[in-house]
Length: 223
Image (cartoon, rainbow, N blue to C red; front, side, top):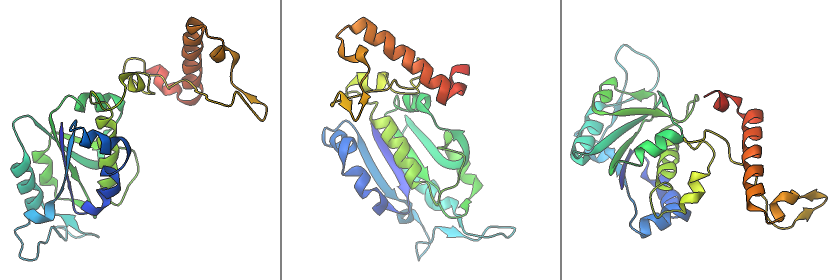
């Protein structure tokens, strides 16, 4: 898979690309992540990418030309173009599984007061990671890229994401897990987990998963 992230702040991605699972996935050539500064596509002599909004108002608005030209330059026949915007469709694990199917994604990071609405004409999907406002789309783009990359075959053990919270097949939260020591200041690991009976362990985990979902996120059970 190839992911192109269009941003004005490529330096924000240095840590994201050089650590942990993302770094290993890149080194194993399971994913290619390119950080593209769309300022490079500006036709303005001073590489300007924003301007004041027509009709007045506060802040600066991203211009359509640099982003349009960047997308047209990078886009292929099988590309999915994603715009990150607070009024987009709310992102979830099911969407991550859907996007994992594509060979090429372009993710556009918005910034400043907003973007020229004509940019919406060149995108296939508008996404938001929650009902709140950030200074830009850089952090959401990392969230989305991370959630997709970990689903790619060979990046992590498949059982790790099959049993994740929000898995589309179950819509349940993950069951609680424990490790050594068995007893920490009177807080003990449940006996069923150390008894060696795998059927009982599976039943316990399923029960705990349902109970936790019911208590913390009952809306998931309604779905």
